[in-house]
Length: 244
Image (cartoon, rainbow, N blue to C red; front, side):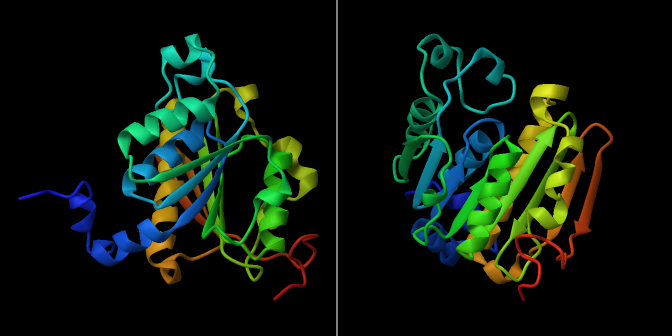
């Protein structure tokens, strides 16, 4: 008897053969393959997503290894781009998935309707705001996440009817946000936050109607605190305010 590589997830009631078929037919854009992106890409590829497009432009560095899944000392010593190293590792784990790499900085023309979902794994808030704007303009479902120190945050935005990143964090408040380069990063919060992004993605790709947009998941892995906060659409939001 031949056992499917997806045997264990096929046994999950909420996935099953129907969900697995949807995975195989899905196309996902992952922006950034650092801490969050390396976990997200790894989980989606192993789950059997049909096509995954990865966007990044950095090389693998020694300081990446404590928190960025799959990269190795060999990747650092060879001076590999993250995309090259990531594709090598992911394709070795699942040769059935089509992995497309785009070695570039983020640009708005990356957001097109050929994707079922966009996953923001960047660590740059100006870029996050631009992704938010572009996904809103295209009415494209996307998942936002950030993590630094011991805290991670994840939120799903489905359409122009939902609260967006500007509703959550207005531009003028960006200076108040802790960034990884400034306050460090607990590697476990990267794993937890990235896994939540991937879990949200897999749920959306199988049963989109069950994923509620606008719920911010906040995790503090030092104090083992997990919260869900509903983010309301703000009437004065420069992106989505006044849109219903």
